[in-house]
Each structure stands twice: as structure tokens, then as C-alpha cells.
Image (spheres, rainbow, N blue to C red):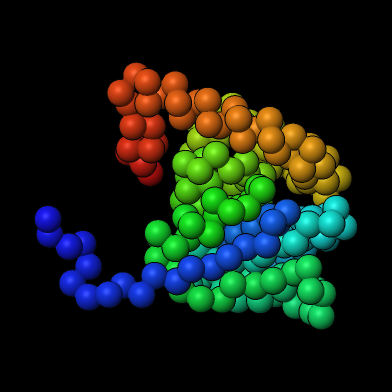
Length: 197
């Protein structure tokens, strides 16, 4: 068989602590939420809630352009060893291997949500387009969508965060069952979803 890589790809192995959640921002949210401070407070509030529950929060990027936003959120927690930042460039295989170690993620990058669902990891999604709504509906996760096109309050985010933290195991099973049903019908659910992008 032919090799996918012509040279050693040097895939990084990142070990995530147990009882951890990922924060995956997206700078494009700034087009829909005008104030940078408001965007940072969305993610910063999520980090605060995660670490106050005894979990570790990992802030990471899915695209190079998101690094400065990751740094902004991370700077709100400087010196707190329960908040980590992953600054490296990761390929798709590495990103997926990291995401599947989280209990759940808070994400705005669409492809990070797909990687999460592929590995039965629940997501609190902060989005602004129909594709987010459709994706979460597809997996029975609509209650975990924060739509930034409307008025978003920190209280609303906190309610959904509390719910996802309390229901992680249930939501993992729901997502896994949805994938299993799709596979039983010889349908590749992720190919179908990617066609809509």
C-alpha cells in the first residue's frame, strides 16, 4: 500500500488531564458580536465556570487566525494552573486525538464541533449561522447552541454550561447512538454533513 506521508509526519501526542474541557474560539464571531470585550467574556466566563467546577480548561485554536483570541482569553487567568493553552499548529489527526480526550468542549469553529461529535464529545456551541443549528439538531443537541445573532446573556451561557456539565455522560451516549444508527443504515453521517459546508 502507498504511504499517505512521504516522510515521517512527526505526529504530536498531547495528553489531556482527566476531567477537562476544551475552549475553541473563532475570531469570525467578532463579525456577529461587535465588542471584543463581549466575545472575550463569553469564553472567559466559560473558562471560569469550568475551573470552578474542579475541571481543567484547555484553550486551543483550530485556525492560526484564532491564536490572538486564545491568548486574550488565557491572559484573563494568568497564573491559574487549571487553565492551559495549546499554542501549537496541529493537523487534523492531532486535533481529533486531543478533542476526544475532553469531557466536552465550548466551541465556535464548525469543524471542531464535527470532530467532537465524531468522537461522541458533547459541545456547547457558540455560533451564528444556520449550519450550526442544523448540525446540533442532527445530533439531538439543539439545547446546547448559543446563537450570537440574537441577544446573548452570560446567564444563558451559564445555564447551558451547567446543563452540559451535569449531563455529559448522557449526551455522549446520545451522540454515539445517533452515529451508530446512521452507520447501521450504511450512511456516512460525516460525509453528509460536510457536503453542506
